[in-house]
Length: 210
Image (cartoon, rainbow, N blue to C red):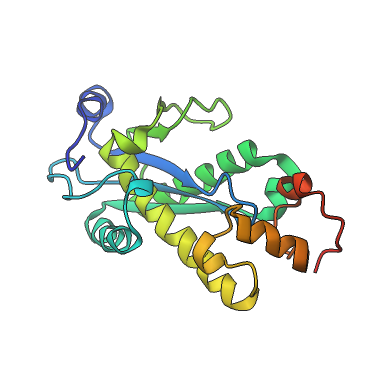
């Protein structure tokens, strides 16, 4: 990517220069929170080389780019929704809640509301703010890609730290996703407090919560 998209240029002309890109990471895993990030990048600065959909980057590149994004951004906000929230209100509404928290954090650090918001995926009528949704926006919109990278690095780091405390699930490698090894570990060890019970029903495990 390494460039601002035409859509972003159009939205800045239409709404103003302060454009926030929002993305989430962690909708699909069996364990861990869903994490969202809102990023405002400086409109007058060239895009950081190498920025792309976080899923297409290796871990070292993501970490390096996340540091550059944090150093360059006008404002960054992060929000999360816990496993308990995911199980209670479902993953879609938990994702929206994480995005709302990220936007609130971003606005507080920015000292104003962004002129407009770009969100990866489909429109979210529960978000509560006017926004433009872009399917696969993390692969086409610079500001969304920046948010995707920061969110991915933060969530992966959290799951890797939790792996040291909850050994046996290989979170240091799968960061909570339902790999064959992770599913086998659940069958062997049961569910931890960081597992999404609503996601693990299909595993048909009846073991008690650890």
